[in-house]
Length: 79
Image (cartoon, rainbow, N blue to C red; front, side, top):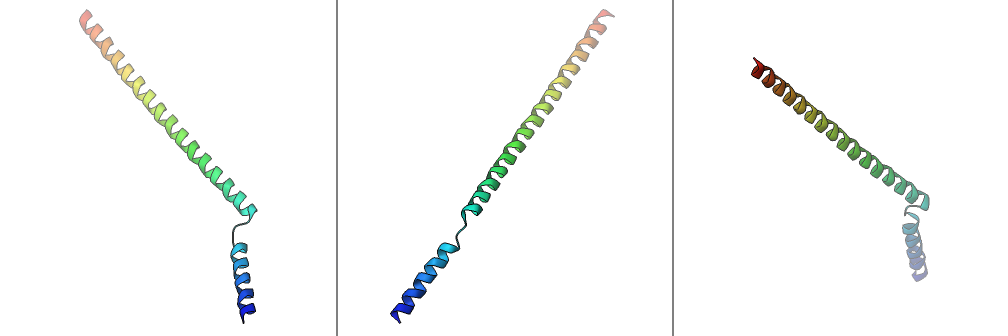
């Protein structure tokens, strides 16, 4: 009985070791993590670029409005 129990214990331990991820699975998981991180960085960069473009457009709009207002003041002062 003791030998059977020992044999079953060893078989159980071997099955736990066999159930773990293989080196190929670990490499694939690392690759997927790298892809996910790269996508996240790309999205953040695109978001920052979009925000910068919007801010530049806003500043251009404000500058244009200021120049129009100055032009109107100048033309009103000449009359």
